[in-house]
Every structure is written in C-alpha cells, then in structure tokens.
Length: 326
Image (cartoon, rainbow, N blue to C red):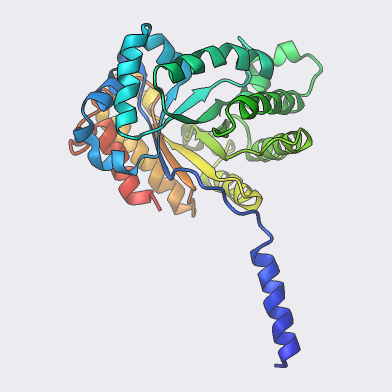
C-alpha cells in the first residue's frame, strides 16, 4: 500500500476519533442516602465516618434534596454541625433541586425560592459543588400539563429549564449542573429529544451546557410491561449522551421496593437484592455509565451502617461500587 493512501487512512480515522465531544469530568460515584425517619441516615453517616470508610473513599458527592435538608434542620446550629462534619471529610454536597415544579412553574420562580435555602446552607458551612434538576420535563409532561394548555410540554420545559440553568450559572458559576429525568415514564425517543432541545436552548442563550444527564429508571415497568421501555432502550440513551460528550449518570435503586412494601414483604434484603439486580441487568446489555448513583427516596432500607454488615444501605453501595464502578 502506498504512503499517500496510508496517510489518508490515518487522518480519516483520526478525524473520526476526535469528532465526538470529549466527556466532561464528573465524580464516578455518588451516594444519596434515604431521607425518611427524619434524616436518620444522613446523621449516622455524619457521626460515624469510620463505619463507611471504603464507600466514603469512593464517593465524590453526597446527594440530598435541598428542601428535605432544609426541613430536617430547622435551626442553624444543628445544620452547621451536620454540614461541618461532611466538610471535615472533604465530601461535597450535591443538591437535588427543582427547575420546574407545581409550586414553581417558571425557571425564575423556582430559582428565587430555592436560592434562599442554598444561601442558608452556604452560610452554615456547606461544601456544595453541584445540583441535579429533579425531572423538569416529567413535571411538564404529567404534573402541570393542564396549566400549559396548547403549549408543547417539551418546548416549555426546555425554555424554562434553560432559564433556570442560566440563573444558576450566573450566581454559582463553579457549580456543575445536571438534568434528571424518568424512564420509561418518558420514552427513549422523548429523552433524546429533551437532551437535544435543552442543549439547543442553552447554546442560544450562550450558557454552558449540561455537565451530566441522569436517568431515574423505574425498571419494574420492564418486568410487567415489556412494551414500555427496556434495558436496551436505556443503553440507547447512554450512547446518545456519549456522542454528545455529556456524561451519563444512572440512579441504582430497588424499583421493586414500593410494590413489596404494599405486600408487607419489603425489608433491607429487598433493597439490597433490588439494587444489585439493576446493576447486573444493565451491565448485561453493555451498560457502562460514566457515573453511578446509589440513591433511595423510598422508605427503605432501614439500616444504614456499617458498610460491612450485609444488606445495609452502605453495604449495597459498597457492593455496587466493587462490581460495577469503572
């Protein structure tokens, strides 16, 4: 083969390699302790760091909903003590926040209301480096759809979310910002459209794009309704994010827990098995997210520490991280 042809092949392959957007750097592992029992889990994590030393060493962010943190710590003294313990661990908080909610139907309205909480957290010593937007498209598609009348929910959600992100970027320029959306309540096609439309809106406003896209998968739908979502469809969303250079983040949780709780069959084992079941199912179709999030917003598990005790919350995080964290 002649030298000119070899050079042509080399430069063609090189252009293909560098045509995709580079993936941004985000923490590979995030821990989102449950908020039930008046925040017992997060307080135990703060008070007993030695009981989850390995998981803690792998955790890049501690994830908690801003309104829950605010409600569970009414006085500044207790909040300062709690946040100070995580600051000593050099463990930044990631706040799960609203961008569009029934109580805040525009990006500007939700920003103004939540900023009061964020400023309180910062005054009390919070180490905050990122926020995750709690399903703005889902909210527009299902919860405030009647209020939008003839407005396209996708267009409205993208416009108002972009405005919210612009305000956060203006006042907190160092924070990373990601979007969470539900699957398969929204289809793979809808989520791909959401990612693209939101990115277009941010580009038009000359605002920095998403730092990550996170998917909240109710995988029990895959079990009961094979026509509504699948692990392979979820992988298609991951592939789309990778082509766009957006880190793909996945919440690992026991989607079977609520149904088992109604049947009085839910316990710490239910949580543990469900989380690991999700991990194995997604890796079986080639899933390899850029970020793993072990998070519970259900009424379980009820035991959080130590990480070495079978079926505790931190034990599930430990085993997920050891098996699936790349």
